[in-house]
Image 1 (cartoon, helix red, strand yellow):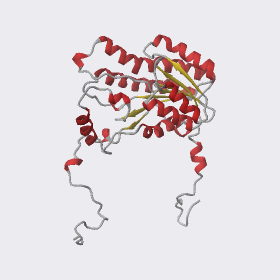
Image 2 (image 1 turned 60 degrees about the vertical axis):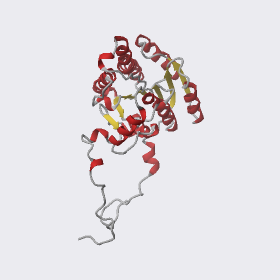
Image 3 (image 1 turned 180 degrees about the vertical axis):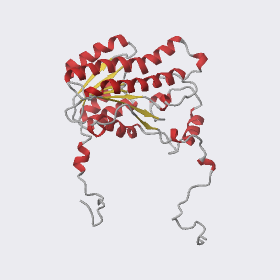
Image 4 (image 1 turned 120 degrees about the vertical axis):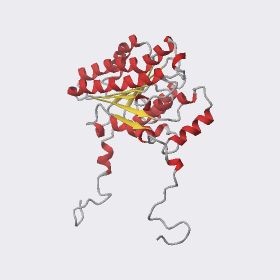
Amino acid sequence: MTGAQGERRPGTGDPAAGAGRFDLTGRTAVVTGAARGLGRVFATGLAEAGADLVLVDLPDAPGLEGTAAAVRARGRRVRAYGQDLARTGELAGLADRIRAAAGPLHILVNNAGTAALERFNEITEESWSRVMRVNADAVFFLSQRVAEHMVADGVPGRIITVTSKNALVAEAGLAHYNAAKAAAQLLTETLAVELAPHGITANTLAPGMVDTPIDGEFPLAREEFEAAYRARIPLGRYARPEECVGALLLLASDAGAYLTGTRLVVDGGVLADQMPRMRFMPPYRSSLAPPQDGTPDG
């Protein structure tokens, strides 16, 4: 509907049609690292959009049943699997069992991750190997097998890998994590190209600092670090986990059907600001606001 000059009037669209593009009813989503943090919020967000869920986390992860209960409370079907993703030789079998039990798989969210805060000269072969296996190798081998099932089932699926701003810029004390997340980014772009003929998209979601357990486990002067880091974020705070769900739903749904091989950065503006100069400048004041001293401008 347009006005006299041809402009579109606000509020005259069909909200149901817009929301329908994000509807995941009838689809099944697999979420790794689902017991807590972003994984739990992603699982419940997908359930609220209509998807049934398959949850994967460590066999002894205490929060996995809690996430499953949250999905059930939203009226969706859910299955949970205990699996150490570092055991990459077992992931094809895991994907096969999930497909046999849950039917065709429409969405894979590679969310599981691990990190250790260590200077580069302190990283052992064991530490390097585990961080790479969980953050990069598992992404490859689970995506490989799930994609095989998507192609065999004729499903135009969605593969979404949760990376980090660390896939794009380095951070001290995280050499192995930085390398693994960067590897996952380029791997995802490769999947996007190779799977495009089958209608399968592959993208990454790259959060900045999020208020999740993984960040709270690092051995550092927490209060001082967090104050300094918040000052570095243009929006001035860490993200709440639920603030990453919208980006996930875009990539998982028909609304993002033409997005592939790309990344969505959810970092509060950190990567946009090469020099944190704003805190040293006079506060911004709109030129349309009344003068603060009560005297007219000019």
